[in-house]
Length: 352
Image 1 (tube, rainbow, N blue to C red):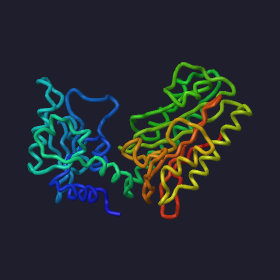
Image 2: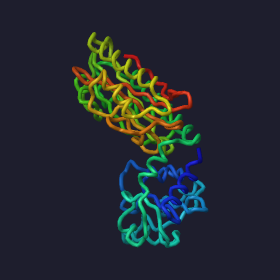
Image 3: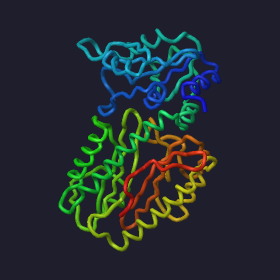
Image 4: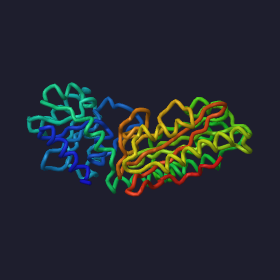
């Protein structure tokens, strides 16, 4: 398999373009390694980073001056425009001028859903967003290493959830311990998506931690999705506070059995719709059976009804069957598709 930058050049060449301009944050990270701050949301001082790749060159990053040092640390050439300051706020004009200075005026391949219209209006462009989505699905060896690190951080968070869950503490108190463990393992502040619900809240499939107090026999559903160095980990476990009920034991055993069947079925050539049907033949749940994972926390291949996506060696997929009748149980593992089948990357405890 050709490295991802070579695959990106193939995409722009097939589109008849002279360069590739991408603005989707996940694709920018995939192409350049730059992982910008995302917890604060859109900035009034800058646009999201834009990556530019020409046929014969290395990726270039267009960012505000505030991001220049972090962008340069990737080894990419960096072109900047004014960011935080005391002057008028006009990141569109600044980014537009910077972008105009680095593309040759010919046809440009873009991810049209993410490049701002104000920047695209003066460009002769062709949309290659779908091709980029599929190119990102197969991971290079360095990406696999980064994914292993992010999943190890997930494992630390799941261990903290089990160690700190006890009758009398609130979900928010438990979350404080979990997030602390995630960031201690990563040795940095992290963007994190998470479900952490307990007791009757588990039938709601997920949700943020709240004020509810944990009680004996409660189930806790903990789904952790931290981004580490630009790559998202993912994991889910459902466990009991104290002695679980007979109904909880039965539901958990069923979900764990289906998860094992899915893991056994993951291999090159497996069709996403068939994997989804395998899970739904024994369980009824309202969400996807699985999804790809990488610089985005939900990527191709999506393991959903009707999907014709075919698994390939080098893909990383999360599989997460569940059941939400009476009490909610979901279990998730992250798998690397290998030539012989798959390797389970997740190391967290799945027991009840």
